[in-house]
Length: 106
Image 1 (spheres, rainbow, N blue to C red):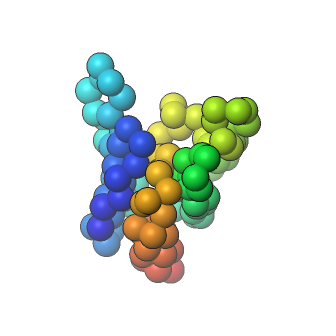
Image 2 (cartoon, helix red, strand yellow):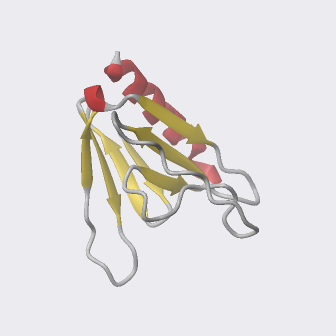
């Protein structure tokens, strides 16, 4: 299951979540998280004005706060390795991925 995001992708194979961010001029650095290690998920759907995001919460860490501003639209910063911004047209795929991860967690 794949979700294309803004400057990256999230893939889920039933056991592992892989977040691959690909900023211009940098090599992609994938982050792999086991689904059973995830303690929570945050999903904010994108709308016509702002991108949404998918964020995974791990034990012993606090989720990155949403950055507010005219051009940010309430998303975690790009530097957060456990989240990815998504476009509005990918809301359905992101919601299905979050549901699959939640099911694999329990």
